[in-house]
Length: 301
Image (cartoon, rainbow, N blue to C red; front, side, top):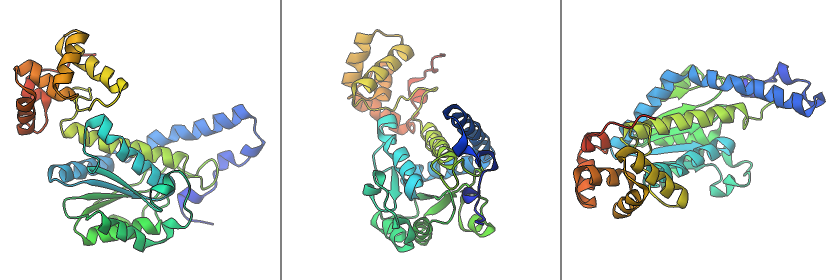
């Protein structure tokens, strides 16, 4: 009888092996409906984590996720999506997974059992007082994660913990924030890639998206800090310029080229009638907030 919520049996799925395909889908879907509510109950803690990430970024620090298995993969995924979406440097948001990058595509069983490896990962990344390190362990017990967070605190970093089982009081005392969406027992006992994994992704998405908004990388609800690196993003960048500035596609394409593929720079260049270098300088002085520099209101949808 494991006391961790993530390891308990779910009475609503105890006969799932006897169900039809449609009935299995219905059971899983009903359980998934509980996830958003559980995440919503942690809104204050998630907002606190967002503030800690913003503080780290403004101080020149980083957000570093640490996890094992599904938790580690979701951290790496969220980190990997920041550069193309918001034009950040790859070092700004990092994901550390027990077992290294090989564990992204093939489970490295046992890698999570060594707290010293987690501590070493913090040393390798020269974690310091400007950084915020968020440990992700849905069960709350992963030694690799606890080792990493203990070392991060020794190095002066602020730390947080994301889990899906009720946190013990000492965990809240140790960290600057603890986020605990209690999604309940999994459909398949202990399979935390399901509801717990979904909750984890929702929380990470909210933290980084909110932090990027606060850092001026969104104008209205448009991702104006994206960097054009493929046809899809080229198209999105041109559409943002057309909608925001009221210009035609050809002009948007030319403007985006002159801005080096950076949408925010292109906006400021057009509105202020300045070069790409001057637009970059103005944005830097305004903390990246394009509305403040361009004196524009975001277009209504």
